[in-house]
Image (tube, rainbow, N blue to C red):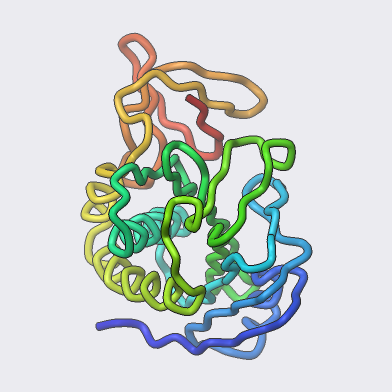
Length: 233
């Protein structure tokens, strides 16, 4: 059974997550907030999200008891499946924990937050027609149009929500289903990576994610689990 989403469109906002947080005070229904412009878009760990006009910025407000980290994988997987479905591109990958890549360049990012009343906010930015230059980001980026994918914001959002609803239902039944689907897109799996964790750099082999979505990093004979960190190749 799919979720029903109420859609609210705005011209200009600080961020769609901010609007979703405010709207959580007045609704208990699933809601999608979309904006033409957001001037204070943000990513994980306080990073700025460069919000260029014409790209897609939206937030889902979801009443759920699902663990927040699980929803990161539901959302990123759904985006990857959407892009794969609307294009012939084969080099789509997912960078732990929340980035969607094309040719190892970031095309979309996700930020999960929680409203004061417990509702979950899933903020998503997708580069449709433009992407930041190298001086504006810490990681190479791209956009869909540069990869010969021409789709309207409305169509992409509709396709994404369809995949999200299906994957969300699967997640409620068993996160391991989502984990296995996500790993098929995982970037750097079984390869040497660097992980910035608590102001230190750890090196090892990326062995996937566990049942809570924690990164599994193999160092010699030991495998450690890492929660909040950033992975580099």
